[in-house]
Image (cartoon, rainbow, N blue to C red; front, top):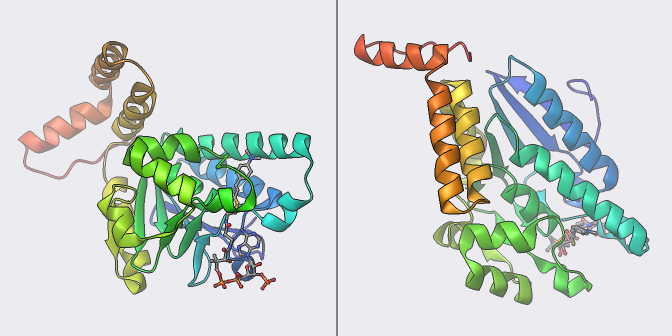
Length: 263
Ligand code: DAK
């Protein structure tokens, strides 16, 4: 998966942003096992690279972000293989969700089934106006199995999640924005530049603060309020021991831009 090599996932680093591009446009970037494995390898590489501040996930071509798990590959699986595949998808998506560096989904078209689930495992979703979202699994005799029944209701509420999962209907980018499934909708032609600008903004922030904020939101979100507040206070306190906190506050008082070291 070296830069420029023809694989199912392209990996490029530009301006401290790792662009991870699912590259099976003839299959609308559907996720087979090999592709999921490559996404995980690419995400781990970006997380481990000190010169990378932000990850972006997107799809190759004009039509799809990811049109779901590869139906051809899944059709041949037995129950045991299906369960293994599900666990594999879930653990891969967890790598993204638990990334200490912000992960943006740049949704450039269909985000269906496992594709919608992949986008939901990212921290921020920016969609082109041509994007379409949905969980059509029930039409295949399946249910969402890579976090869709859980992450969707946490993002949009149980009623809307239930409707999307039971009907399998696709919704537009604008509707996805209206219900809180995506953060922002931008003109399709501007998606990459708008995402690059958003990523540059994140890359200028304190990496340790970003990592702790992600941890507080993700881990705290699964706890009761009391425990979550305790966790927030602990992570907040830890920030006071960092050079980044000293730099951020000094820079503000000295009316200059901070230069964070990430320590
Ligand atoms: N898998 C494999 N191939 C796909 C695909 C997919 N998900 N989506 C599209 N393709 C392929 C099409 O078969 C076609 O291939 P060729 O016939 O040219 O070889 C090519 O991409 C172009 O697609 P279309 O010709 O269909 O293009 P259209 O513009 O007419 O339609 C569409 C676009 C996105 C509406 C349509 O392709 C479509 O409905 N695609 C399927 C969408 C879908 O149902 N996605 C959900 C898949 S199920 C699990 C956990 C998670 C999952 C599974 C298990 N475990 C816990 C075990 C996840 C499941 C899913 O994601």
